[in-house]
Length: 393
Ligand code: DHB
Image 1 (cartoon, rainbow, N blue to C red):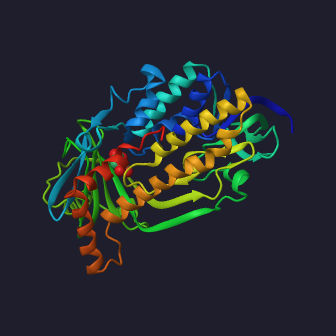
Image 2 (image 1 turned 90 degrees about the vertical axis):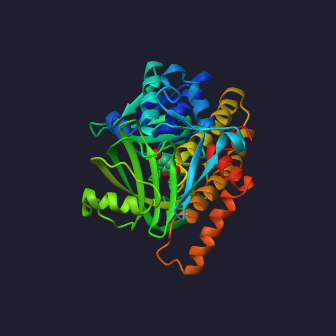
Image 3 (image 1 turned 30 degrees about the vertical axis):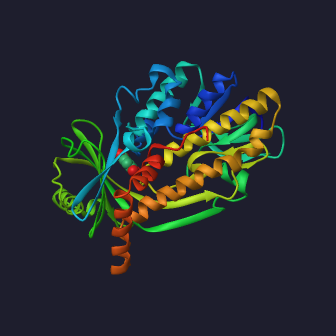
């Protein structure tokens, strides 16, 4: 097959990780090609989580005014943990002097795509990567198929798989699509978007005998909420009135402001970390390397943290011929990955009610919540993880 493109870094996947990586590489004068099988419109309209760590916002600042996280997004200085009918505030400013921003992931994607296209980035939508080859050589390749079904090859100095949880690049690194540390959960989230005023200024993470609910926001007129459900739930099985009942009963002590529900989805829960994050001249970042359950919104933030490390490792490799940071990448990235795995698992297990939970489990869980909210150290531990550990650590 003929080689129809050459570049320094071939990036598979135009999610937040791939797009930010191309930006950071360009800042060092390193050119890249990004391919994604989805259309621009599909990428910009996929509904995902809405919380950005402070460090994520600071990195997005480097794309300039195209980042609207601070102007359109909202800074949040705390969250509420709610259980036994009472709310307990975890104040971020008081405990860790940091904050998060509520700014949905698809808005981040719009910002990154417009900034990259304005900078002349070679960004190819509707192009499906079919395989990554020759990881152990100095010229790894992406075998791709364009929108017309024509196959072509991108040859690069380095290939990055930022192609999400169903990554095709992963096989070039781990030898299989699935090889990794893995955990499933016996529940999922039913997510809704509705037209209503906010029910709360800050996010409410609520534990109740009926299960978990999260009250989040999108704007003054659109709200995002989730409630714990069975993973096999059919989104059409509930009437709007039933959805409001399910939500209301999971946030006892709060009255939700209701309005028309215009979008429903079920989010499945998995924890996953690939056994390997790099092989030769191919590395994985973001969901291609790991998945977290959504509680605590670590997914995109963790992807961004991987990218920050890998961008620096590629800069020293490609401009200085120094492989040390690249050799260290799997180990360095893994430290944060496993902290985020722990945090996401912890928030999930502390707040949800497992279908087989005993009375003992239930009372122990309430004891755990009380341990956190009644201790300045407990609140600080949670706030530190929620706002994000320093990216330089
Ligand atoms: C949102 C999602 C999360 O998983 C979370 O922990 C907080 C907020 C959201 O979509 O708004």
